[in-house]
Length: 512
Image (tube, rainbow, N blue to C red; front, side, top):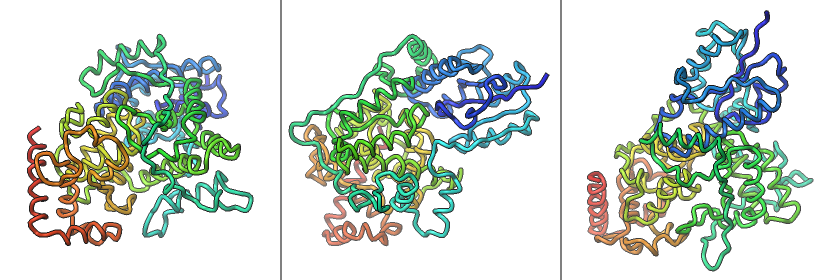
């Protein structure tokens, strides 16, 4: 009797036409879906993140079965579960007569190394299919990067625009004659504004079963399940997408950098978990956004700003991740060594901006990109916290965090630990930026206008101290020329006061 093809489908491969399954004969294939403890615990993932992925997997399995596929599904609480992908492949080979393994490439170095060992371990041919959900292949990115001294996202993004034709006019020029409208996307959310609210989906029976299991099994993991709101089916993810396109996208461009107390979502899409797990297709989403612009439903700065995040930034960080290699995670250009403060897991801090961003992260497994970059990331950067510790936290606490997308964003863009491969300068700021873009400072016990004293905003002294202690490595950066001139123009006793203020705060931080 001829054997069948075993096709493992991973938890971030929940797409309709994933390459390993596309055009395969249903009668000759067994789809293997595995919930394994190793994936849930290699870092302490947020409870809601685990619940989202497992529930989405279970719903996807039902969809596949309804389409006529034979799905071998291993639940996390199966008493015979080996706890690892390789262990479950071995058990599946005992249950079924298999003559080959076929799988879409994994998104992370760690899992790809595991897959590359399967052929020798199991004595079967293993076909690894490219992940065609991305616009740029690994080779495409490497070809673009070859010979360049600087790998700036902006120029890669233009190539992706040309390749897809998104927001390109009939003459091959960018709509509006500009590639990038970021300068029009920096309004603070002030005045009377009607802020749209995303759909909050109620758990069905399958999701509730997962929530109960996660609460019991991962009680020591960070985060709450009390506010679980995710779409866990393609149908619901599409509904959330339409809600964003109708209600939030028109003002997304204006307010994508804004921050507001008690408003975790603002005009953001909250679609990244569904893009990264496969429930939504990134290119299809961008085409719908472009169509909304052509139909005059949304302004150009909104359509371009959103599309740039998907076909520009998202594709770019994936390219960086695979090009730089598995040792990228160990880089620490600024030699930051301070441990992560405990309040990153509790939100218990007098800094209102940090309490807001961390509090909603604990509740929702979500914070938007400016909260991640300019609040929690900025603080970690100027406080000299270990980039590896910061990376682990971001990977743990956000529902959309898979290493290929999270690591370059954290280590490179946020913490400048790669020495400038991604960012042209460290994204460090004092409290002034936060005050400009938010209402956070109005409710803070610290005074954003003060640099020195018990009531001074910690971001202020820490910002200048960051520049001072990293002067040898950063002084030559032309984008920091102005702040370094300002620092040098300060009187020596003022600089000493700032250093002392920062040292006192960091000493207290280490005791918490």
